[in-house]
Image (cartoon, rainbow, N blue to C red):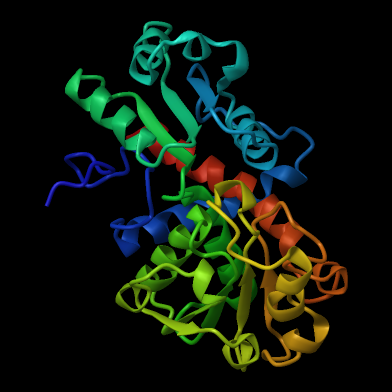
Length: 319
């Protein structure tokens, strides 16, 4: 079956979603990222892998962490990085996304990193490049609407593998606003593909999508029951900007019932790790005592994100 993310040789052509990517590809990305974590320890943090390549960051939504780590990753691979200022670009003057892509291709773009409010925008770009014969130009999805955030999902998998070493015996809980979270969809797709035997999704009914059981998840509406004996706790941010109408009484009420506190974390295994894709809302989905505690691996997630994004770009640059 045709996969728009792979070329004719089964190699990564674009990174649009983790859903549908084979385990071999996900594992190859994680394996490729491992040596890149050591680059940060060098005096000269540069590798010549993408020298002469032009990477355009197209962020149609605000971002600090993701855009910065993509830029650092590309520069460490010696690529030329161009950050398009969307607020003053032609798209803000009525130019279509695909017209923007065509114009940037005329400037010898080699790779696009795109974040867009519309689900499917990176697929549209990749399809356009294929239909116009530009198969040497690659697209990386840095988050599209509610759909996917594949590099965040990958860096989360790298973090889990780093601290837990293996996926085959883990119980992982994804907690919070799954309904509006593109990160959660990428996490669940990666966890199930990599063989995690039990993926739990915990949250209020108003913030969980239907069909989670078909995605291989166990659903819990009781946080304490859901956290019992888990190995990994993956907290999610409340996506207030994507909510239509009030789905919760208040942020304070949400924290009381669904916020991760030391008391609730004690129900998980003693060596459980706590993750969060950021930005964190302290006192809403996570207590500062937990966020800054010994079990939190939130800052290592950010560090590993650079290596994982280096891995993705280096693999695309070779295909």
